Length: 97
Image 1 (cartoon, rainbow, N blue to C red):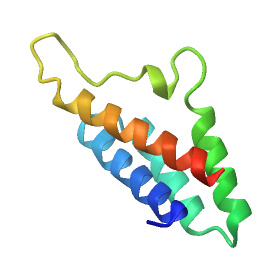
Image 2: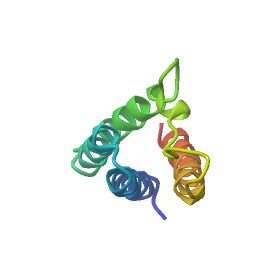
Image 3: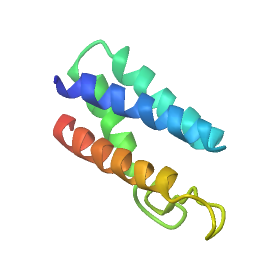
């Protein structure tokens, strides 16, 4: 799969998953990154969106720290899927950048 396309699809999958789990703030962020990369006039615009995505992984309260599980009795599946998507996005963003 083309790197930009992979990045866009992963951002959109993350956005949908986050919205379905009550994190509309993060969902909007990833939908915005997907739109920017998909609508970029060339590779430079897509690389910029990828760099912005990678910047979300650093610092306290970052995307890397995000947990969806509300309590120890909830299913771990939403967080497991989040981790898979988070890893896929990181790989796609690094490859694109």
